[in-house]
Length: 359
Image (cartoon, rainbow, N blue to C red; front, side, top):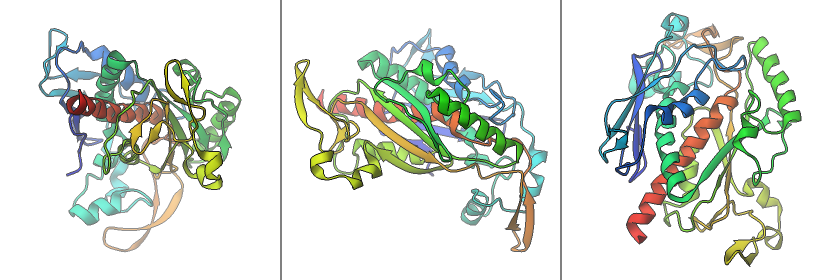
């Protein structure tokens, strides 16, 4: 089963969207790290539903409880279990999809693979599963911050065909959190907000792009050949619900350049090797080069919409489905903290692996 991620810093998420609870088990966290529930809650609050009018109105506090692995405010080096109770589940809103497949959703594929599915809320295919990722990522962020000052900032750069102008070298978390779209370009954010609102009122949805920058990443993270840093980042971000594309550095834009234009020229600055540009996105040969790691992930429009759509039943009969329940008209604002924390999981795992291999 694919519910575990990482090698030394290993996380296993568990629980269904409308089950009793969801959570995560973190194995491999170094001992003696100061850790408390508020450290984790801060990140969960950024991800939780109901925080603004442009996200799902499911009302969950998402209050976390540390069940194991921490004693007297410090980690023990043993598995850390974190639990979040589901308190506002409404399975009755999903009765219609018990027998009908939602277009572009995981309903059909889960049924085809397992012969059974948790149809209330989508089970493990729900974005509610990402609670465990964010809780684990909060721990990873703390390790990265305390050991080498790594700062990770994600933000919305595109909603449908609206594109923001953001400098990844200067963007701050404060700018990102200044509006409910989580886009630091205020002019673009205002247009994005109107577009998301329009889609929400129409019962439709929109997708877009989240960009993420990790600063102060040490040189040397990443293992050739199959465990390249960008390969693990791609796997992490492409494992997120609704993700459909990944780029790092120049990404697909680099295909339109000559090598003489694209190459990052080395210079000496501050007593160490630096590059004049960062089209590599902070990774060369699968190994971090000390420049900011810059990546983007594309998210499709939310699959569950309130407009009538043609589909088929579990018996293979034609049907019409009109979605019910509470769903994000655009996943991007709440995806921002999830992206940050998935990046943190990858970087933390590679940091511990580097220390184990090379000291």
